[in-house]
Image (tube, rainbow, N blue to C red; front, side, top):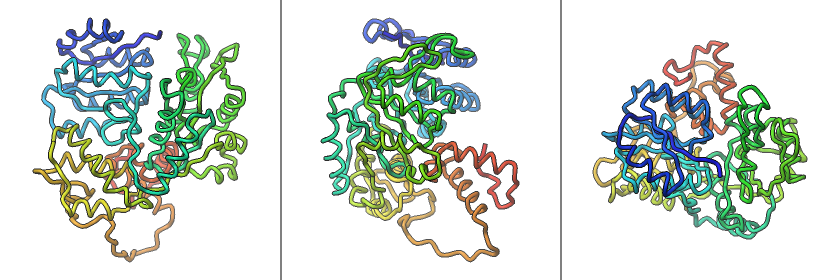
Length: 466
């Protein structure tokens, strides 16, 4: 069995109380360093060894921000928990914006630490966070699919019917509609439910790293490969692998994936012999793959291999009856998380939620409710707490007046304005901005690189473009 450990970057001595108990009861090592520099070294050398990272809030703000960013760049799926001896609402919001999985009060109790670790011990994989949780509750159990919409109910019935088979599935829908939640639902209803569920975002890594993450590599396969590494397919053995944003996969890897689906075996980078696998593949995309095929950006034969079972998730604006149900669910979830029991929506706030357009779909709704719970003063969440503009007290769907432009605006300038606006609204978070815009992170990164080389006088000078 592969060794597991948690990395603690914190000088607080209370962590020593957990060392022996973790090793005996959970078979988990605790590695604690007081130095931010030493923590960076360990993560650079062996991030695959760790289940999670606990990071002290006492680090200077630039240091904390930079360290979380480095961790997420090196290991996008490694959960980072910020621990604070003096927790505040402001600290929680700041930690989540930096990309932390959660914000914890220190010193932790054994029960709380066990609760935090539990999801990662079950299958070695986790995803989620404050308001961007994808498919799992804090307890580690799959998030329920909350709906009364006829189209969604029909999709769930179809998912339950095909879950026991090994057929590959393709889930399509706008960003934030719950594609990963449906994938986890299929896994939970299948005979592989006791096996691992491994998720990988195909847009989060460059081609070379993605190949290693998917298929693994042998020691010495390339510079820096100091030991054998198992890929996600091997880690998902007898379970399910989710390939998120499959449309962003490089054509070279598409060909390798096609062979995996045909032969049920993978080739590690630098390996001499194929490795047989027994894995169910589910792919998701917010792109039109038929258009990508026409543009020679996606293989037609791979599309038909993936599209054995097809699901098209409706946008939230097409299932408005679910908005109150989802809003109440998120309200109770975050009221419990933030210790604000008894908080409720005002009638005006609920109306604002029901009438909003939600271009970011369920994920955007969840973010709004989480923000509302955090900012609520007293026992009621008001429209000013959930809307992006705190001065707006009317439903977000209210029609905006048409503005007559002083001069014609080109499509390019309009595109830039939308991108800068999305970055402003997400405090410079490129992943969230890309999802809000309905494009991939790679496309957003390329656009920003293009804008740096061509000055744009109409750009917002305060935009969070890094």
